[in-house]
Image 1 (cartoon, rainbow, N blue to C red):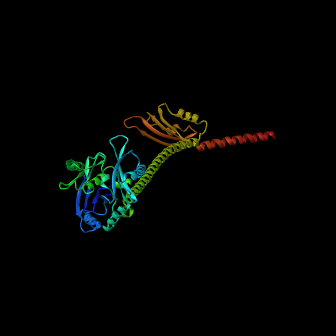
Image 2 (image 1 turned 45 degrees about the horizontal axis):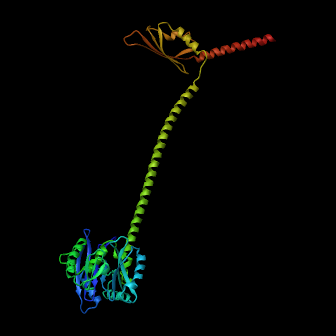
Length: 431
């Protein structure tokens, strides 16, 4: 048995005369009889024969074990009912027992299976009833064999309503089963002989059977195995549950399955939480990086604007700090222009707070600017460079004129003295 589904199970037929069993395994999606055997009755107790058979077929406690056979004082019958849920059908079977059993049965137990009938809206219910003391004998046999079984299932109720002919010589040699009805075997020898080949074809379609495997001898085992591998498992059918709980193995497969599922869910939850945490941190890191890039771009833009504003501010401060100078500077420049001879050209002029820079050109190579500029009282020569152009008669002159501060101060003093003299003469006339 695997963790999440069966891949092996064993079925053992028990009777007073013989014990037969087989182990079925799922290989390549097909159920295969991998081991089988039988133990003929002897002086041993049933538990000892069961133990010997389990050893012969290589049974181990990790696979499911289903017992089958015919119990003492048991009775099997079929009746036509309507399809009902398992609990309602069980109540219907209990009501039917009193009239279907051949005699009084002490503390009867029963199991049943429902199969669809040929007519619509009806169902064939196969019932197997037996005294409760018979199940105690099964429990004693299992205890003697030192093993547990998952369930006991009668082969008589494993027959479907559409099955043709089934004959169990070791259970009841006087009756055979045909399409949901038990009939007398008298005069049906050829029909029963042909049924063996039909059952082999049916079972070959379900199982991989060895060539020397006798289907007619192991029909009871194969019928229980067919019930196990089709539809749902025997252990999942509450209508078949008759074995005492103390005779059932403690299988923790369901608990292990739940534990594995919970563990997988826990791991998936942890991985999902880690993914969300990593994803959140990754997204947060990307957002922070994007914000940092945005801040850097803003800082670069602000620095650029700040530099432009600082430059404009410096230019504005330079303009504001420029001294306008005296109001008649233009006139004084005009006086400078009047003293220049006509053969002198002013090609460039730069006017600043400290003076005037001039570039002059003249055709007179012997021009004497200091002599020409003596009549000017306001200006004096701050710098003078004079050179002859190469291969030409033109003289290039770089001239810097600066205000004649001493001359201006002398004028201010003389004008002040003149005003004081006029003021004093005025005062004396008043006296």
